[in-house]
Image 1 (tube, rainbow, N blue to C red):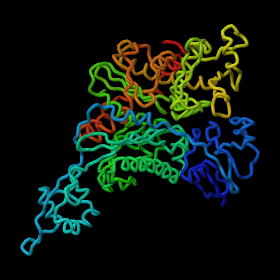
Image 2 (image 1 turned 90 degrees about the horizontal axis):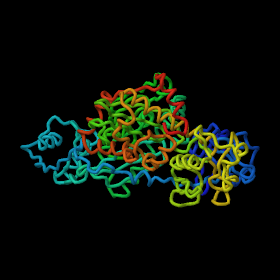
Image 3 (image 1 turned 135 degrees about the horizontal axis):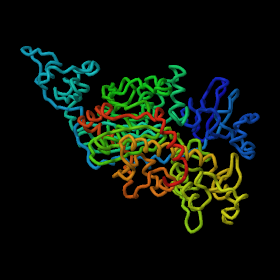
Image 4 (image 1 turned 180 degrees about the horizontal axis):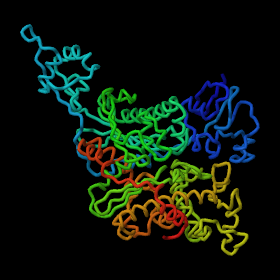
Length: 612
């Protein structure tokens, strides 16, 4: 079997002949971006052959890589099939997870009402006249004779009691003792709240006694190798049970990586982590739990479950206390998941009396409207454009990504994450770029670039070399290869603009349908909340310029950070809030946009770059 060495990570994978480099990297535990699930259409899985024979480039490689790139050894990992040993250089991309983790703890004060309780006891010693069994002795001292106990805890109870002079602490969840510990450990009670995003997974470690966030960590969702969107992952999972297991193992491995990081930061022992909560879209919920998501994809988009699921950590392989309780909050519908439940809880939308809309802009677009005593939600097929997928030089929010574009004093000015040389453009930069080029008059309201040959007077001299003909139409050069550490110019293409129009049109149209159903107008909205890390970094002015958001006074548009993650933390901290979240699927009215004949008309109108 051929061996693949990956540098500079210095990892090796031995795979069967016929395996492509994308799968070989996955086998080696390396993440290579594959937005199109290996179909060769996104061109994002670029790697460089440094040792080994080269073969004729494929059609996809010729499309996405320049002749200079091909000559230098660059290939697409999904296109390169292995039949001999080879050495590959994998570009290192530093994801800007700090942008998401810094939003943790957006809720000012959490209520400490944990599901788990701990009680320290000092038991009397057995004697000839008192031969009470160890477990019954413990339950009697706790005054809880009805409690059950984990078998693994009962197995070491006799030795534990005698080694610690019969002074122990019992951790109790519901009607079950899940842990017995030596001495008094009542001050050590922790939990982890996860936000399982399609692109990024974030975890927060909470001290359950105080409901305080003491550490946060995040990582890229490694399922990205099987596609940037949920449909690609559903398709992969539906092909075999092995594929479903593969996707579950990926997300659990990522969750364990975060747990390890959280415990390293705080020196907390893993056995002292007794509770885990998680939110995510419905597909992520199914994949995390290892439940077949096949029937989420075709109409009528039926999930396997909507209620909250609770299992033991050991059932999933999460590396916390083996008997720790893992609760995935409930889903609302096939494409409105527990992440939306988290947003509702964090923003108190189920308790508000005013008219408020929330938009969670991410790989998927979910919208919620609280109006006239009703709570409604829908999801839009916005596509992953806001995460950089299907964009020519798109990328996630990582170091070096163009995150801001301004048209000032007749010039186009750029800003990058961490102020590093530009290497691509992320979602906030995409929205800014479109808004800036609209302001500069280089993009028409229809979304078409101005044709410099037909209308040269519309293109200032300073932009004539930057607005050029590319594949599929005109494109604007944001950064030249000479100005950054890149192999080719970074451009905004006509295709990129179309992808943005589709995404923003879908979100706007979804909101209009919710307003129509509630029988209110745009002006009746008291507030629009932008949820998610992406929503926090989107400029309101740019979003208004391109028509992503309704024309409201900017002060009515409020970024609320990672509200889904906040909702997960709130549910972890308080069993009352967890119960409140559990009731939401029965209260929220789900609108299925695909059955609305009026959606398409609004969507087509909303695609234009005009204030509507």
